Amino acid sequence: MTHSVSLIDRIFNCADEKGFNSLANEVFLFQHKNNAVYRQYCDLIHCKPEKITNFHQIPFLPIDFFRRFQIKSFQGEAEVVFTSSGTTGAATSSHFVADKSVYENSFKRAFKRFYGDVRDYCIVALLPSYLERTGSSLVYMATQLITESKHPDNGFYLYEFDQLHKKLLRLKEAGQKTLLLGVTYALLDFAADFPLDFPELIVMETGGMKGKRKEMIREEVHEFLRSGFGVSKIHSEYGMTELLSQAYSKGDGIFETPPWMKILIRDTNDPLSLIGDNKNGGINVIDLSNIYSCSFIATQDLGKTIGNETFEVVGRFDQSQVRGCNLMVG
Image 1: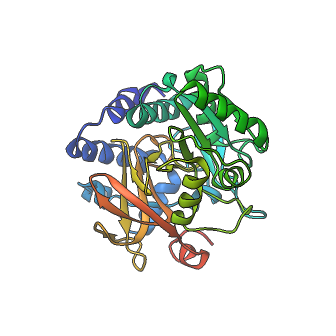
Image 2: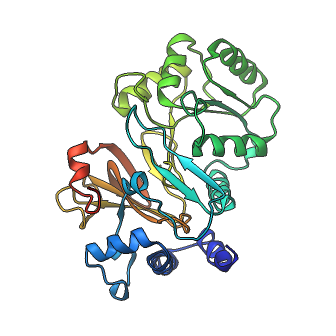
């Protein structure tokens, strides 16, 4: 993948909107040329690549295509394939990653940007469901961050709530900067069974009930977790199998993207049209680190942009709404 090394460097050093626009157009042309599925989709919606001058004009591939096709902008074998968890009986997404160092570059840079030096933290990951299967990009990220941190009390937990509770109490007593990264339903279960008062703890939920609990709105989840951990804010990570970048929220569900990632909102009634700030619609993601798959993805999440590179997630499309967007899926 050496032919794109300079492009990858430029992606991660993107500094302003003009630079982002230039890079997005360059990535679009690269993927239109090298990704047969994306090119076919662009043809179906009558996109003319030579007429695109701004990233707002670039077509967004429906995320469901990752379930049905190999979304690759490269030849040969992937270094790693990340897969989504999926509900029982549902098809899962596969993300064929040509160069896992691009993913590592992305999440390490983003973590440093939003949280500082990972070596300052003890990282405790409560990730049942994810740990109980293979191919989780979240487990891969957590493993790498734990390795970088080198703290002796780092670790993964499934359902050992008693051990986790004792460890968190020790870390609080030691005054150790601690990040508890957890799948939402497990954090709720833990907070219900082992409440503690650890105001300095960073509690970061990764979203999802995985069918383990009834769905709750974010305000309910965060209120319960704030009370259960004795913290003033609940942090969140917005990422998915199909992306190699994450956005982070330090509270109130307001997410911020790193410079090589942007959120645009599409009209729910006209999926090829974009709408402005403070209006609910479908979340479209530009993730330039997805250089070897597709950087332009129409997700099944609903949200709104707020401005200054921030956005909020407000829900998900139901399946009938999703199917209406997918021109190539039969």
